[in-house]
Length: 403
Image 1 (cartoon, rainbow, N blue to C red):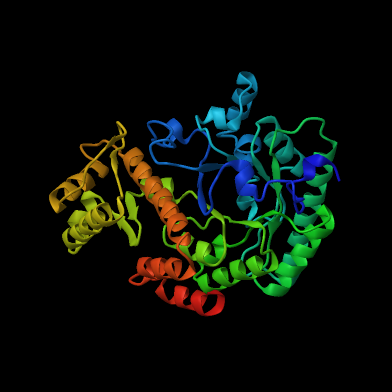
Image 2: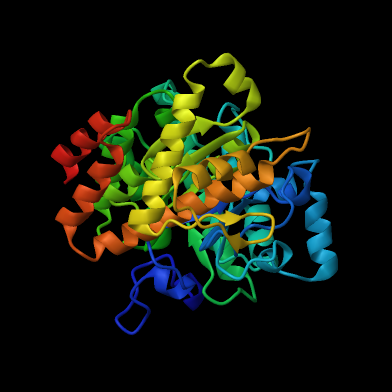
C-alpha cells in the first residue's frame, strides 16, 4: 500500500505516535461543525474561531457538492485557489465530513464517494470522512446489511482512488466510519474496514449515534463507544454529532478522542445558551413573559456563570469586540445575560453562538487538564458536571460498565 495511505493503517515506530500529533491537536477535542457560508448568512458577524479558542472545524462535502444553497462556495474556492481553512479564516485542522446524515432517512445517496474525496483533496482538508450510509435505530436487519455494504463499498472506492491520486496534501487522513448498535454489528463493520485497508485503522468515526441519543437510547450510545474503544485501543475515535456540553463528557469518558457539534449555532438560533455543568437555557423576552420560573432560572444561570468564572477561570467576552468581560458578581453576570438576548429587534445569534462555542471548547480544555491527573480525578470531574442533570443515571451506567 502506498505511502499516502499511512494514516489508515497502524503506524511504524518511526512515524508520529498519533493522528492528533500529525494534525497539531490535543484530544479530547471538539470539532465545531459549520455550514459553509453561515457567516454571514445565518447571522454570524464574523468567523468565531479565534475568540472562542476553537481547535478544529468540521464542514461537510454535501454543502459543496449537492446543496444548491451553498455549493456556490465550491466555485468560489476553485476561483480563489484557496483551502477550506483559508476560506473560513481558520488556522487549525479541518475535517470534511461527507454529509451522509442528509441521507439518514433516504434509501439512496445522491452524491458519489469519489466526488467527496476529490473535494477534500482539492480543498486541502486534513481529514476526509468516508461516504457512509447511517441508519436509524428502527432499521430492519436487511436495511442495516444493505447500508453496511454500501458504506464498505464506498470505503473501498475511496481507498483505491486515493492510491491513484498523483498529489495528496501533507498529513491527509481518510477516516473510515463504523456503524452498529450492538457488538456483533460493530465487529462485522470493523472486519470490513480492516479487510479494505489492510489492518486496524488509526483513525475511525462512529456513525449512527445521533439518532440513538435523540431517541433516548443514551445508554446504548455509551456502550457503543466503549465497545469501539475496546476493539481499537490505540485508534483516534471520533463520535459524530455528540457535541452537547453534557453529552460530549460521556463520549470522552467512554473513550472518544473527539466529537463534533453544530449545537453551538443551532441552539443560539433558538435563543438558547449553555454553560459547563448546566442545562440549556432559553433567554428571551417571550420566555420571561410566559414562564413564571424564568426570573429564578435566570438567577441560577447567572450564579452558575459566576461560580465558573471564580473557580475555574471561565472567561466570557464581549463577542462583538473580542474583549474580556469580567464577571465578579451576580449583577455583572445578569448584565452579561442581557447582552446575549435579542433587544429592540436586533438578533444577537452571533453573541449566543460565540458564547456556546466558547463554552464547549472550555469544557474540552478542562477535560484535557483533569485527565492529566489520573482516571479517578477525571471520573470525579465528569460526575460533578452531570450529577444534577438528566445524564446522571447514564453516567452511572457508563461508570459501572466502562469505568
